[in-house]
Amino acid sequence: MMPPLLRLGTRGSPLALTQTGLVRDALARSVPALSAPGAIEIVPIRTTGDVIQDRPLSEAGGKGLFVKEIEEAMLAGRIDAAVHSMKDMPTAQPPGLAVSAFLPREDARDVLIAGDLERIDALPRGAIVGTSALRRKALLLHRRPDLQIVTFRGNVETRLAKRAAGTVHATILALAGLKRLGRPVGTPIPEAEMLPAVGQGAVCIEARTDDARTRGWLAAIDHEATAVCVRAEQAMLVVLDGSCRTPIAGHAILTDGALHLRALIARPDGSQVIETERRGSATDAAAMGRDAGEELKRRGGPGFFAD
Ligand SMILES: NCc1[nH]cc(CCC(=O)O)c1CC(=O)O
Image (cartoon, rainbow, N blue to C red):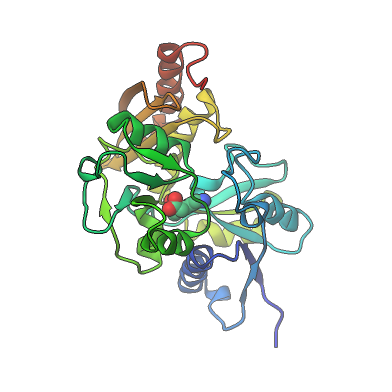
């Protein structure tokens, strides 16, 4: 057999493998050289984020824990490209690596999984909600200061199982992951109640900047509208933080060339939320994001994110 032409690195979770399968299929459809059986090999890699299960990743060092080992494998030449959930990506890549393509974004909203209950407002007084995301926690407490938020880690399947076993009344997950896993559970939460995380619902592919062959193949599947929206969201995030230790939300949509960015920051205890939005054209994505970020930073003032 021929050696593979493209080795795609990924985490080994069911969602990560599903997303990598989508990338493989898209490449096989769009790039004749990669359509032969065995041309693309999928290489699962265990990351620090997969190993740490006992505490929120924001406490274990935050952003980058799902990508570090994968990026090392790419720089060492053991894989040629890597598939990530954009939400898990740090705002900058190490020297020699770059985000080179996006799949078309899935629905970016969060989903409430609470048995028959379909609204945050319908949760019983004092209900226990399992989530480790600071953004979800702060936005939940903002609407419902009575809720008890408990740490909840593990992959999507683990969290669904824990919720079903009754350790918590409810949990919140990204609709994108549930859809891709074929798990039609829960009710989407309106963005006005819970604005998604930057990059949520988007899958990106990272490659070495000097690998023109791989980057050429990736360009063939790149979804430009998703790239534009994520660019605006990330530019906002960079101004504010990016450590994953702060409750920040941002979601942009592109309709007929018109870009609409919503963004917010929240105090960790949910006591205050500051929101803003920008409208402009796709070419202004980064400037719109930076501008929104600067406004939030100014309105929040020093110490806004302090516990
Ligand atoms: N590390 C958590 C993570 N990273 C990406 C997704 C879901 C898929 C996505 O947002 O694109 C999830 C799980 C979740 O939040 O439900």
